[in-house]
Image (cartoon, rainbow, N blue to C red):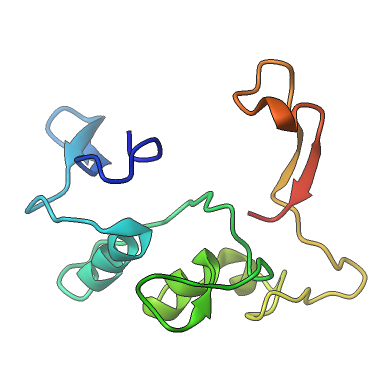
Amino acid sequence: AVLNNPSANWTARRICFDKKDKAWKEAPYEDNPKFVGIASYVKHFVDRKQTDSSRTIFALDANSRPSFPRIKSDSSSDETNVWHTILSQTTLESIWVQNACIKENGESSDPKNPFVVSVNKMRGPSSNQPPKIGEHQLELI
């Protein structure tokens, strides 16, 4: 619902291990925080580690990488993209930077391997995006 209608009400949920039942269960976030876009969602959980020992891993397909064009958003006078917004507004680090695959600016750390890839696919005939059927996608997202 969020992707189809950004203004729709939604409840952010998480997967937690229930020690009593010894099973993974879906649960709402504490205090039902209101999230306005991905940056506020990420910032909420980054800031949370200051109050407890929890850690959150964000595996995010944001269709963004450091080299994506930066644009001016409605809420800022700076030009940015999803990658730079999340990393600049939080203390998060990129796994690609931590493992020396790319530099913080998005350039390759290894001239012999100039392109880091997380997606290598071609859309098939049942794709929900018909104009992209048969298109090869090889990139870092």
